[in-house]
Length: 457
Image 1 (cartoon, one colour):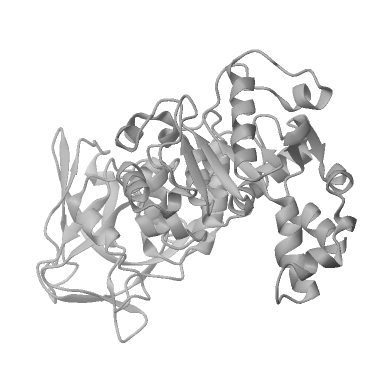
Image 2: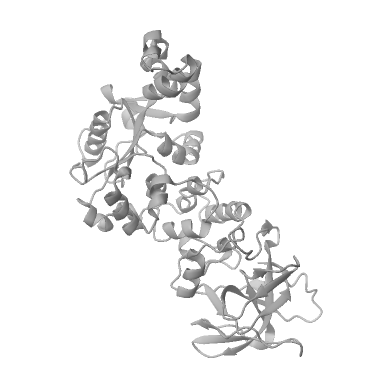
C-alpha cells in the first residue's frame, strides 16, 4: 500500500480517466478504485524469482497503475475537465468521439486508465495547471503507451502533411514516450506493430519529417546538452499561446521554471537565461535575429549558412577533441559574459550590404580574417561606432588567456559594436552584439593567436 501511494502521488497525473466507467478520477480515488491492498501472496509468487519487495515495486504496482496517454491536435468541441467531472459529457461532436476512440484503443493495449490534455487538467486551478506543465514530459515518458491521433495523415508516406508535426507541444510528446502507436484520421493503425518506435521503417519516416536522428527518436535523454541541435528541431513549430513556446521545451532541456500565463515573450527570455546558465556549449550562443542578448524563439537557431551548419552539426564542443571556445560563459546582470577572440574591424558600407574587414592595431601582425559580408542591413554612420568581430569557437591555447585561429579554417563569429563617446568609461560603454539576419561565419587567412577578451553581450 505504501509503495502504491508513493507512486500515485509522485509519478501519476493528478487526474486520470477510469476507462470502464469513462469517469474522471483523482489520485485519492485511484486508491479506492484499484484496491492495492488486495495484492495477495499468490500474486507475488506469480512474479517468479523476484523478492517480495521487488515484485510489488517493480511488477505489481506499475501494472496496476499503467495508463495510456493521448497525443493529438486540438479540434472543435473538445470535452473539458468540467464536462467529465460533472458528468455533462459532450456526447456529440468530434472531440468526444475522439476521446472515446482513444479510450477504446487504450483498453486494447491493456490499460484501464487514460490521460488526455483536453480534459484531465483542471485549468481553473493554477497549482494543478502549473504541476501539469512542469510534469508533462515525465507523464509522457512514464505512460505505458502514447497513442497518437493524426488528423490528416493515413500512411508513413504522407506524415509530412500532418499538422501534428508543426506544433510545439507535440515535440516532447514524440521524444518522451518509450512506446508509441500512430493512428490515422479514422483511427486506423498506420502499422501492425505493438510499438511503432520498434519499427525501423516508422522511425526512418519520422526522422525524415522531423530531421531528428533516429537514435534520439527511440532513446532520447532530456538535458541542456546539444542545445543548438535540439532548438533546430523546434524551429518550425508553433504554439497557440506565446508562453508555450518556452513551456513546451522545459522537459526536453530538463529546465525548471515557474509557469505564469500572461507573461508573453518574457517566458522565452526566462527559459533562455536558465538554459544558457546550464549549457556549457558555445553553440547555444550562436543565433540570428531576436535580440542582441537573447533569441526570441527557437527559429533564431535555424540557418541557411552552409559553413555554419557544417560546424554546428559536427558538434565541435569543448570536450570533443581539442578545446573550442569558452565553456564558462554565464548570465550576469550586464548580460551574457563570455570570452571571445576579438579583432577590430572597419566597415565598407553600401545600400544593401556592409563588408567588414579586420584591421591591425599595430605593425606586428597582418589581418588574419577574410572579409565578413552582412547582407541587407543598414547601420548608423561608421564614424560614430567602433566595430569588432568576436570569434566564438577559437581553438584553445596552452595559455588559458589566449586563443588560436588556424589558416584555412572557418569560425563562428559575432558582429559587435560600441558607440564612440568621448570621456565615457569603456567598462560602462561595453560591446553590444549587433542583430543580424543570418548566423555569421568568417574564414582565416593565416595562423593567428591573441589574448582573449571578456565581453558582456
